Image 1 (cartoon, one colour):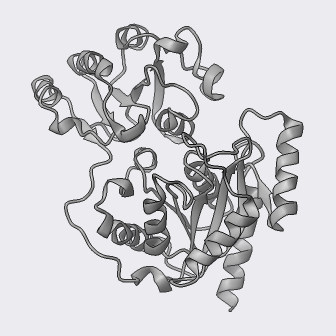
Image 2: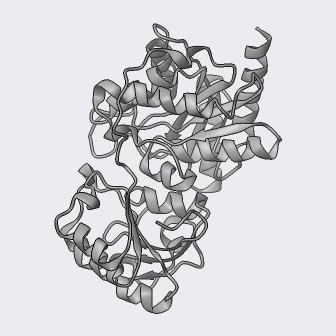
Length: 359
């Protein structure tokens, strides 16, 4: 597998290239160090990525892998860029993946379905001399959490959400970059396939057996603590799922207990009122703040110290109003870190870290 920084990526997102379904593609385009040269999606062919997801003005969308190879012959990597429900490989993608491998492209796969275990695709990869990276594959070793992360000197901050796909990873990455610019030692801890692809390390927590998810979360934080080792350092843990999500709450609770955060940043998409793909209403921000306070209290209390909003698609007036309402409702600092920068959130973390060190 080619190293980070050496990849020329074609993103395969056929039938699902949008801001929610193509979380992996959008994350790699926005935060990855490798160049994305084309997106494959018949639905939006002829446009550019920025026309659909707001970033990637120089990234064309084409209907097939063959078209992508024609306009970007130096491509060397195919990234499967969407996260279909259940993580199953769409049958229509198989021929496109085979074409890419026969053209010499490595494959980065973030699905739950592992291509290295696929009876058709794995032999073709070997025949073509290309590598498949199943980014979600969990480590072979397992461990139950034992509270080792509860007393670290560094301040551990976990992003939590009102729902899935509301900006937990983006929030952590934006804050991490800001803290680094300020001269702070900060470590981003990837806990999902997209974060792993961006940072080059981590564990996809949702692929770990449930008894060991908290242990895997703890291991990741302990690894980060090798770099962020003093009371002025920050460890930013990428959140997953939501405590109020009927399908994915388990991984959220495991991250809370395993990573043992000192503080939480609550993430929310301002225009969303229901849990995605369900008809359940999203609780109010103040109720979510109280819920997280109650859930963390018995094991290790961790207050919500700021609100991170995703205002994509909203007008400037509506976005500013949403930020104002979030602060008025919760009494906490709030912002959209992508639209307005993460300074407000970074300020909240630094203030909390100073108070924690002084206590």
